[in-house]
Image (cartoon, rainbow, N blue to C red; front, top):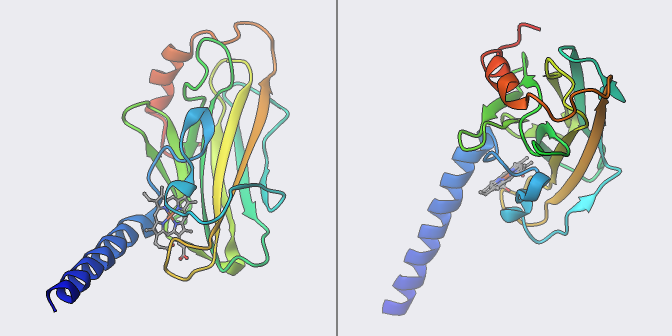
Length: 208
Ligand code: HEC
């Protein structure tokens, strides 16, 4: 009897924790889960599936070479036909050199389906789904403004969840991808990232 009560209490606790995590998370996933620069991925919580570097995940709109200060509309899409729901997280950072991992440019969204949040520890911005998307709209648009100066190659990491919508963290498929864009000029690679950070951090609204 006592043991059963204990088990019941434990199950109730787990249910509360999962529901709580869901309520907190359905809005958006926690920051710093793109898999880039040693970060964890969504697999930290959506386990039971091996992350796939996927054809099912695409990023459109990244120029091969960016023009400093220019704005680009990026489209993230999941084309996994088995997905019943989905979400993503994206970050843009300096790819290499002494400032590797530093924020590169500014992310912003005019779309309520996407939220942009800054990791206060690192200053890196993360764009994520804001509320899980249904199967027929696994596509999101994010605006990215390139840094005001050429900082050399920039890497965009995306982690996405092609979910089964079963309200459990099991059975979801995590897709990972990274895309690079290079600067238009070869000068000053990796320089002045810090001073740009302060310039761009104020410009996180969508006045592009
Ligand atoms: C700290 C734990 C945690 C991390 C990290 C996490 N999630 Fe979740 N996520 C949850 C929980 C809990 C739920 C609610 C249970 C469920 O629906 O799978 C959830 C639900 C979701 C859903 C809704 C799925 C559905 O079936 O309705 C999506 C989409 C999602 N997460 C995407 C992501 C993405 C993309 C990442 C990585 C960028 C991520 N999550 C990282 C805990 C997490």
